[in-house]
Length: 304
Image (cartoon, rainbow, N blue to C red; front, side):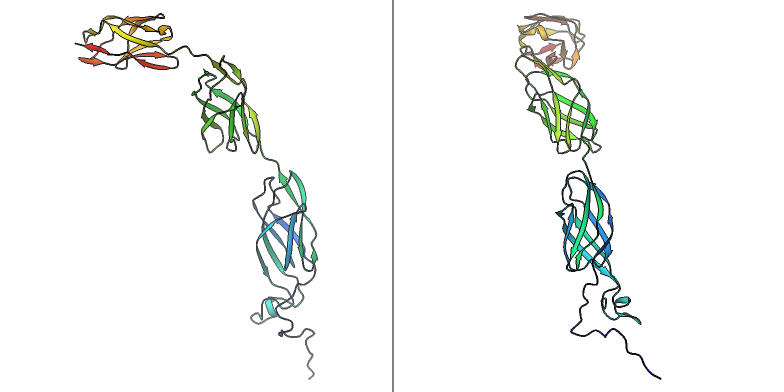
């Protein structure tokens, strides 16, 4: 009986470790699309993707995170159990995986190529997707004083990427954006001294959006300056007619006695009149209410 020698020599120090077999073949790119900003992980699957020199997306190098191989090669990864080294015939292609971080690129389709010491692979298509810009539906409230400080709510879509909200070009403070990107809360900056309507613009890396109608600033009247209330005492049952004296009182909308509204309130530039509500014995805090805030009347009112 005559034995036949194997055509391929067993592993020796001269031919181990296994070398690259043939040019690289790129079979798939997963996922095959991603954001134009890049930064996402992409897996490249193919054969003979060993000894990688570079991976490019539209000519832009990608950062290689990891590489792995299985099967094939001249002698694979060593003598397999009961078979050829590495589990395959010498010279078979390897099944390889490369994980990379996609580089940034302009939106559109590009060619992905793998270059190894054995050459450059065929290309696979990867599509860069343009970011979705924000949209703005409304702002609440739509008006506020020129002094700023008004808490506002903007509703829309894709607001999570918004980094700036300007009122007439002046940045406002952004307090919070909900995770769904449908609402944004902030505080208005000071507006034009004479008031008026200004554009409200949202900006971020994904684009810009203008709030329909903008925001209207009004010149707030001077803050009320009460000096006293007469009489300063009355029955706990209420019903006492009172007069509050001072200046800039024309903007007063209501009067509170320990938080309870007075009735029949009328305001002029120098006086506010009305009738006390029921209270409890003791000194009550008297508060003037305006469209822009509250002011406390000195001394309060004593219920007896």
